Length: 344
Image (cartoon, rainbow, N blue to C red; front, side):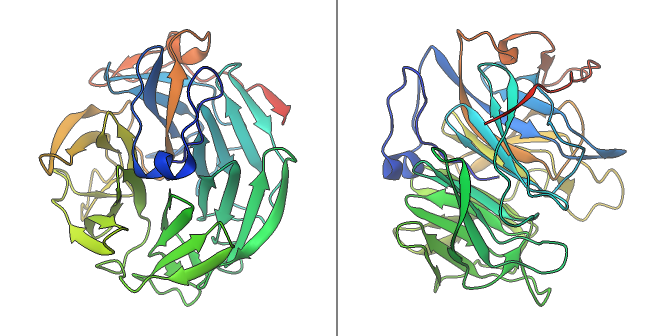
């Protein structure tokens, strides 16, 4: 899932938009960075669990579970320590998780119910792009404004697409590959300019036709993992590069940047006939251009939301509480408690 920052609300300097997406900021105490894994598909169905992973401790802890009926193919993004979730199967719902009060807040419904869509933050606005409405592959774009808690139309994509990779970089949102309205998997890269609500197709396409990709920004590059491999795109040079594949090649992997490295969680073992679902965690170091194994997740799963957030060491939320699970240990048997729900 894509990562987008606009700064932390309390006692953390605001990072200008262009800096926050192109140079990955580092923070020191009293804040720590973690990856949040939301929902997902398990061997026996769908999950509503929300897990927090700290790379410094190599440990998972349980957050408040998702507030809606189990569903997949929703989208997620983060602004500071707040997590936003939209859509899913036959859903136009929009939710925010507030870690300070361990609470899910209901926001205004999107104009169009959609799943398999993109969701990204630029400035103080959240955008949803493309996807599928159970009948049509969408080219529509919506924008949510925090102050008004309203959605409005914000232009259209050049090509309607679903199941694409997506990421925000500066004032742009990149859509990578995906499946078009003719059910053809493409290598098209679309670039949506949030400054003038225009969309264009880049001359340099993905090196392969691909879908169900995950993407994130590390420093000045966009990293992409898909069904066909691992790639890096540098916008300033308009160049793609094929990178070494993971030690355990997987698709439907979720990515997060932690401590200036790329973490890949779970997914499906590429080409496997059995033991399809994976619980593997691997780390990519851009300095060595190599992957290393970093333990396992509490359960095997894929197709879940994944965002990077910064949380306070001093706050009284559930991240610092019990239910911690060591990465290489046994899964917690503690069921997530019923989510507190209010309106934004």
